[in-house]
Picture 1 (tube, rainbow, N blue to C red):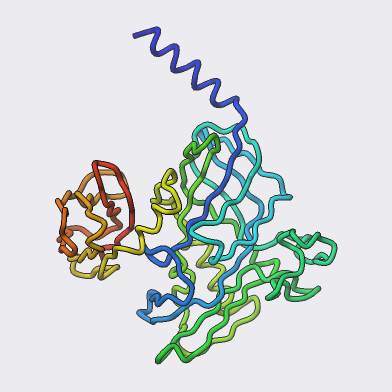
Picture 2: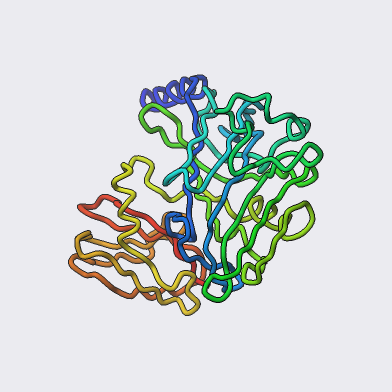
Amino acid sequence: MKNIILTVLICGAFSINAQVNTNIRIYHMLGTQLFQMNSPAQNNLAQDYKITRLQYYMTKFSIVHDGGQITLVSDDTVALISATDGIFSSIELGSLNISNVEAVKFHIGVYSPLNNGDPSLFPSSHPLAPKSPSMHWGWASGYKFLVYEGTGGVNFSQVFQLHGLGNNNYFETTVSAVGEMVNGNLIIALDADYTRGVEGINVSNGIIAHGVDGADLTAIENFRDYVFMQSSQSLSASIEDQSIHSQWGIIPNPSKDGVISISMNNELAIDEILVSNLLGEEITRVNSENVNKLKIDMVSSGTYIVQLLKNTEVVSTKRVIIL
């Protein structure tokens, strides 16, 4: 037993001191569903809307790891995230001395004085170079930290625009997270639930807010406080596997009475549905072979993880909220 313990300690020390290529992976979500442009969504005011454009900057990254250590990432790491990048956006942080990830820190926006610099000085491939449509507001105000546009109201006839900016609105957020080794890279995966970006914002009346102190500021604060969370996605799953997400759904979500219905394409031929809490504790397990719709009664309020299993392997994961 002593030899085994000694071996583990040596391996742990080696891991901490080893450089590993590190990436943040942002999964684009609408609630528990993978993001799709112009797909109906709903905010916490029960207002239906569709997103037509969603982009934002992420800068000043740091990683909390191995018992509270903080490793700063180069300030040169600037990411322009677009919800249309695909299933996820990947941000390369470089080679870092990290073993066990505990959290990730970053800012939404561009830091001063870079925020008030000249976009034309950057090569065209750089995130801060001129873009079309533009992500730059002007010399005095700098870059648009967040662009969130869509349609709401009756028959989605009302256009809304939220463009948040301003050096005073350059906020840091901290998100609990873990890292997973995938093909030799350390991946820190986050889910970005964009429905939470418009919490408390009336998207049904055609609001236009370009600035620093209105609904545009609320949107930036929502991204700071609510949008990002530790991902429930299977990092080792292929892009083809991710397409399974579009073949099943959970309604209603959130659920007010604790009853959820799960529908799926018959061709999935799933063996089981596993429901767990955020601690990974199993709540219920349902045999679902050749069943295309079933109901599950949930007792307690909270956020739960619903997973589809085939041959004991998880093939798809979604979240459900019980109010």
